Length: 224
Ligand code: SF4
Image (cartoon, rainbow, N blue to C red; front, top):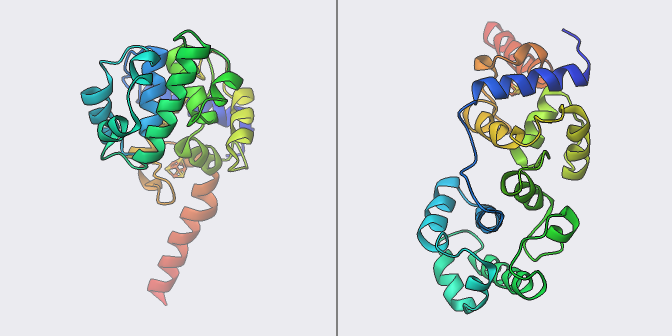
């Protein structure tokens, strides 16, 4: 089936919305989304949730954290991956937010990305799940799935984001990330997807060019 990238993006979006209709981001303030997302970098979701709920959910403003020492933050972040770097980043970010932004969270991507520990993905997650803006946050799952199906041809997060912002219809961008993550964990696992179980395999470039080929070669080798 030969489809345009726009048509494929529409089918993927509809599929994710239907299959993962119950998957949502926990209701949070922009500040909590920001802190949770910094903790989540290179961390399992379960561990992120545990550390955030136990040690950070009672901090409601940047100034609540800005007064802590780096040592105290390290203690609160352990055993998260990169806890030393994260402690430094969270502390600096909270100081900037309390001193320059009057304890508020900035609402532009540029201002967010100027904060320590905040890259494009984290900024977009704060904008979408904290402020409710209709933007696509690009993480490894979003990048892998979009390339596998063939709606983008780049692993550069900025390019993928730009393409997806054009391809995914307005009103459907905010939840794209969290549903793609669910799909990436369940079926379209990075580099070892379960294509045989996937409802999208008829429209997927990876399925045609990698999965089917691999299986045909396997069959040939077995016969030989
Ligand atoms: S067919 Fe395979 S690679 Fe393509 S979307 Fe489905 S699981 Fe992912």
